Image (cartoon, rainbow, N blue to C red; front, side):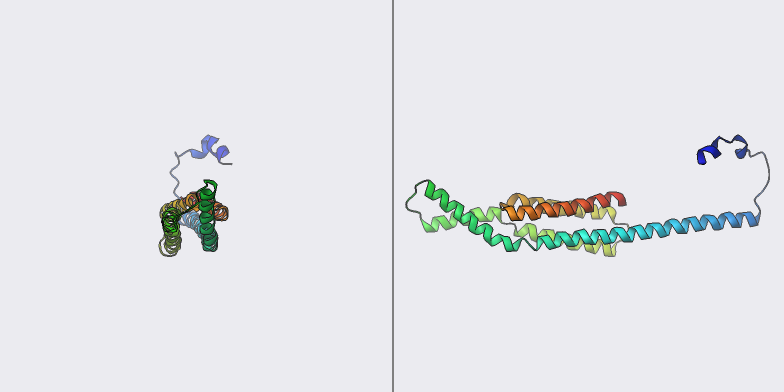
Length: 186
C-alpha cells in the first residue's frame, strides 16, 4: 500500500494552499494518539512477558546451582580414591598419610568451586534486583548475564565430576535463553 502511495505523483502536490481544519486535525491527532497508545501498550505487554521469561530462566539456573552441593561429597571421595588408585598402580607400598592428606587438600583446593557458587548466587540476586528496580536496564542485565556465564563456565571447568558438568550444561542452556531474549530487548 505504501509503495503504491509513494508512486502516485499527484498525491504529493503541495501547490494547494488548503489548510487543515480544526476538525480534520482533531481526527488525525486522535488517530495518532490512539496509535501511540496501542504501541505503548504492546511494548508494556511485551516487557511483562520478557520479565516473566527472565524470572523463569534465572529461577532454573538457581535451582540447578542448589543441586551441586549434593554431588560435591561424591566428587571429593572420587578424587581421594583416584589418587589412592594411582599410588597403588605405581606400586608404592608405604604412603605417608600426612603427606597424602596435604597433597589431597592441595588438589581439592584447586577443584574447589565454593567461590564460583557464591558469586553466581550474587549475580542471580543482582539480576533480579536490577530487573525489579531499574527501568531500561537491558544493557546492565546483559553485563550481569555475562558475569553469570563466567561463573558457570569456571564451575564446569573445575568440577571434574560428570553430574556437576551436566548441571553446568543445563545452566548454560538457561543462560543462553536469557541472552537471546536480552538481544531482543537491546
